[in-house]
Image (cartoon, rainbow, N blue to C red; front, side, top):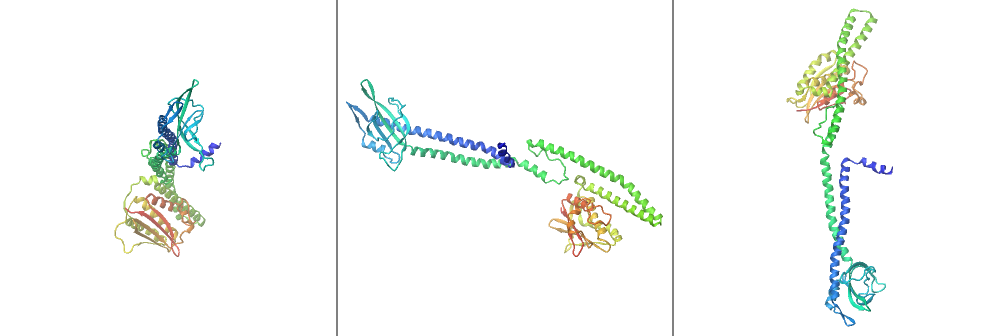
Length: 483
């Protein structure tokens, strides 16, 4: 199970990081393999070049050794010795001897050929070895050298071939330096190339995953009520099956939501007519009796029927304000000042019956004569404003003042409805926008008015906020983008 523990953290990586890692991992393996291959090739080529030089030096030295009579004539001019020993840090060392080890000339510290190297004429051997310093206790330790050993025939004694051994050695430090330089000069560009490739792969994976990020933003930017299909054509071919599956799921959810809405709308339409008849009969019965007990019962019946009719009307409006229904509604340029004036004028009689003073105040100084145009559905926007005014008239109470103001501010239009009624507790400001939530038990409200307002305003790209009015009262502000 240990391998599972090592694999699971990869799930925390982003898809982009995993792609980059899987693309770069083979490159790193190739980089290591390339470095090893480069090192082997560099050693091979440098050794070949060095062995050729050692072979030439050994043959040149061998030509200077000539047998005469029972001895050897070694004609090694001082100039040749100076050439061989020109570089004190990387000089040629040489030895002339006759096996089995009789030293004749040169440096006696050069290691002898391994035992398995049988003498062969005019064909040098090459091997590595360590040369011990001539003086015991020298500061420098054993030095690694490359040696060329050339065997020369030196006559016969008692029918046995005699050999002369010519050895030329050279230190390994210089060639190791060349190997390292070749390795560094090869791996540095490769490292820079891998670094550049990393940047290119990172940018490339970002560009390649851009459609996926756009798809994610398209899903993240949606409201919970937006069930429109995703654009499969904009998705990469590998993601289209996923997009189609999501669209099928959205379609199924949309069908269920539509079925529920149709049920609510149909039920509301079916209930509205009998409730209207019930209200009418209750009113007629109230006018036809003077019995106090019966009047009390009929009054409760009338209030319940009125509350039910109000709830059904709000449910129908909420169904029309849902995103899918709102998007199907035609939107036109609307003069917001003219719409507000018309709605306020229509609501003045209701305000007078409730004992409230409803009017329009100019919220700009100096007044702006230019029309405030917004792209909206006039019916839905009217319904939103009607809900706010109905709430203000009903809950502000008799003797209250309700003021409606319209102004322009930073590319937006603001509709502000203020009253000096009891207001809403600050803790309930956010809750009252939820469906079927009421901040008071008074009145015939059903807790859908402000929910409808928020739904309509959000469908028009705006916002609605509540604020307290000093010393008491409520301020409702609708903010809509201007054309």
